[in-house]
Image (tube, rainbow, N blue to C red):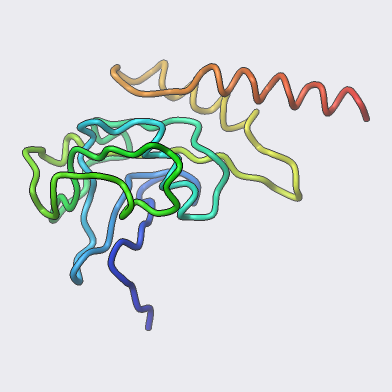
Length: 157
């Protein structure tokens, strides 16, 4: 049996463990987060809480499909330095003017055998998002900077 505590976070309906719709556990219920004010700072906190490197994207508008049940959090305001989502500001639990068509998502970077997998993730994100409707939040400068750093590292070998 798995026990959850308030403000546990999980990602649902992504293609891997590193991406998906953001779901938060609170008072015995898993629920979603509304995409109002959702941004890369909030996504950064989710990735950090799950033990992943920083975010590649913070898509909204139920990019990973609409959730069901309660919308636990809305109007998230994070600085990006918080260790857990509960440290961010928000409107209150279960207080939302959103529908599940506005569920927030995240795409976190990850590493395999110590090598960052941002190249694959970046190309995947760009390919996926060019086929989707805007608006979405994607950190292209971060992707380009990461790709550039990786190219420099690989040139040294």
